[in-house]
Image (cartoon, rainbow, N blue to C red; front, top):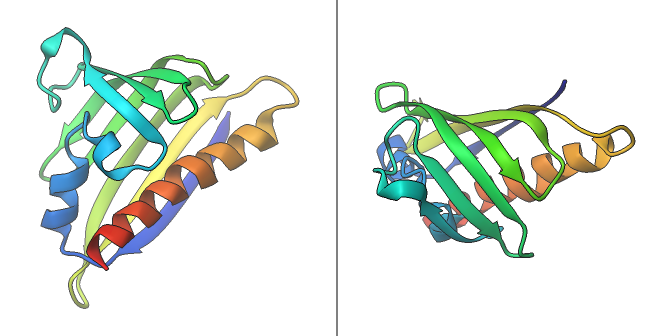
Length: 144
């Protein structure tokens, strides 16, 4: 199983950052890789078990299920159900912590997954750089 861990410091108070990322369907509003998203069956976007169906800017489609969400811990976890990219047994999550020295938020985005033989390095780079780092950079720009 492959593992990715990316952390970042976002220059905004934790409540402001959590308000943006907490909505499981809101990635098109803040992540540059996501073109469109919808929650299937009209379920609330913070309901554990809801499924988001989204399209990347390159046209690839991914379906993910919300596995856990905690307002107390400011964290959520999700897993891929179907994807046009060959990420298998993919689970991931985001957690936020308040930085106590000023108005900032420490973010941690992680994933564990399997990949087809020979594609491990490319998929690790894609998840780390194109998804996680790009997402954190977009969040930072919102508050600069």
